[in-house]
Length: 479
Image (cartoon, rainbow, N blue to C red; front, side):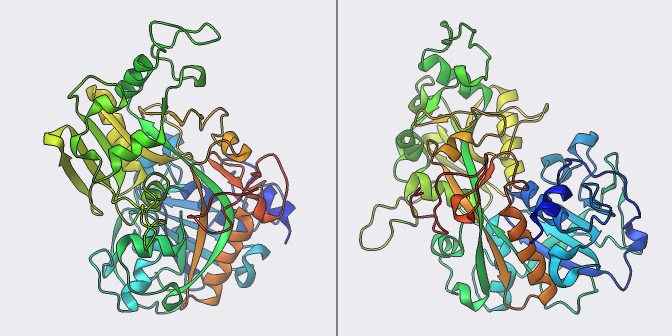
């Protein structure tokens, strides 16, 4: 594959003015329309991979005619980008595809992208059609509204080549009519962890082979413990950062630099998020005053971020079966709040990563203690108020791209992104997903915050890790 061309296609962070357009008026009966779904955490990387497949015939480093469509209409142009919480959880990318997209080469293509409730939404549409009966396998899945000229509610955005305010709505899941109609079923999607973990966590009866197949992307994705500002300050006080100074002499009060960054050990957070361990806990577990209320902002059961948290902190489902050792997570698999210890610990299940960031920000504003797991793709915007802490004394963000300690093998809270293709996907849909897998395995494309290529990709580079889990989330990374 022409990896140099892939690298050029995503060299710029913003899309330059196109040589021609793929606006709603240009999406016609010859335009292929495909749908992908799943994990919320790697939205930026999936977007980068899709845009790398778009044609760049003048080799200027930008897709010729890529236009991005977003659910919401953020007031700030910097937020009019897939993956920003203010932009919503639904998007579409429209361009003429290039040779890396296989059979889509030279074809005008719309790729709808749902990143709403987490990784398992890559699989649930196909489980539903396969006859799986489960409360977390619904008959509908939301998607960005039809963006063609006749049905579009989109308006021109502030960011270049972007349409915003497109809205979203539920789609009754059914086999797609053809390649050229607004899709009613995704081709597949992406998960933070492989299907087996989701299947065991949720009690799903269907096997992976019943619905499709997976491919490793060889992309490592870091996760971290994100806390509200008041909890960060309490941790600093408890660990001697405030009323003293850091090693380089800077004051730590209100300072979120790595030199002032407190740590949470795995044992304490495991106790806080274990259904058996949380029953008599409060904020004092993490150094706050006795009987103080602490909010745990976890994700719903369909979330790959939640699967990653369960595996890392609770050995679930990795230690199920005869050996035992797996702990049940506190909270529930559906959105809502569960109270423990007379309201001293409030465990809220959130649909998306954006919801976790919103709740942590609200807690900071209200002076509350709150904590949750986020992927390290997330860097607080000017309006977001949360900060990452060290885990077992190792910082996840000693570098601006929040990945170096994971690449070096010192920070262990990371998992590998998986691509899923449905058995009934069009060949063009399979080529789209396969093309993104190739793109994601190129270090020049996965040069993104919180992400890195693993050694299993067989390449070398500054953002290639020394270890890999080799497609098994329950396995320790090995070098």
